[in-house]
Amino acid sequence: MVAMSGGVDSSLTAAWLQDQGHEVVGVTFRLEAIQPSAGRLGACQQAARVAEVLGVKHYVLDYGKDFEESVLKPCWEEYSRGRTPNPCVLCNPGFKFKTLLAFADTLGIEWISTGHHARIERVENGSTVMLRRGFDRQKDQSYFLSRLSQEQLKRTCLVVGSYEKSRVREMAEERNLPGVQRPESQDVCFAVGQGGFSELLRERYRKPSVEGNIVDPRGNILGRHRGLHRYTVGQRKGLRVALSSRAWVKSIDPHNACVVISQDEDDILSGEMTVSGMVFNPRWNSIDSGRAEIQVRYRHRPARGGFSVLEPDRIRVVFDQPQRALTPGQAAVLYQDDYVMGSGWIETAI
Image (cartoon, rainbow, N blue to C red; front, side, top):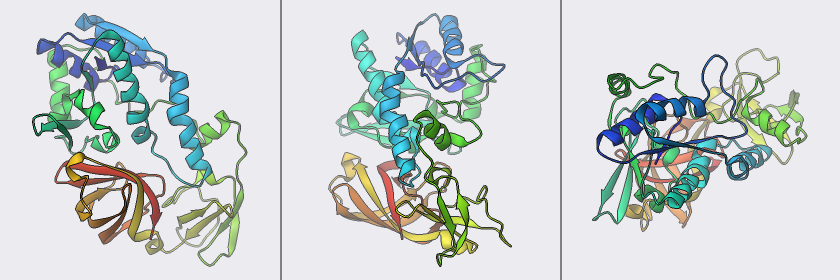
């Protein structure tokens, strides 16, 4: 069963598996918050076109309520606490793969596949599954899949992660698949307005904006803000204060409803952090400390550092070099070479 968005990656995945002799079934999520972009087919329509060309059965799954409970509400709760969530890292294990596997079970289907650029390696006679970065490092999406459970990984097959994105497009063109030149979906499952994702959620749940002061690191009041949810650590634009030079959000204080900004860029550098909610791959379950490359957001260049286990699901990370804008709520993913060691949520930056 292939999760099909109508984009080139998932379309090529379905076609490639079919070429290998597998019986393929396509599924597409229809979520209440999805709105097709003007001038192009929506995901459900585009995926249905691809399925028709391939001659495979295609299902549309309407799980809007589950998506709401598993992704949207937890994201708003994070924003309301002055933290910045990553909806895709949250969605994949708790909604997308969970739902895909449950639906596959109803059809008696053993395997699922998606168009993610990542790789899966089975070791120890298949008893342990390792998640690896995609071959095309510029398109690698292992960060988003880093919290998938062993049970989910064991039933997942990833195809395009073994190829450069340019080669994926070539193979799709060779098969005359529809939508080869379609812009990438970017995994956006909600129509985000000018106010951004956080403001969309506030309006959706009719919550009041937690307004308060914008202050400098000494506590001097520089202005007022329209809601904590509009800010994130490291933010430079949209600060709504007049200053003589550039400034960045240093931290967010939800208890006093304050946004702390600094004109010193070094103030957003941190050498250490604590990470909670850690899940380790079984290969590293018994480790007490070690070295890793740590990625703290999707477009962040992984940084070398050491880590020590404070509690079974909580670690302390000390970077070799200070890092910019370590943001509470974002995912921190530990890698050894290109293997995912474990994943958690940034708790505090030090």
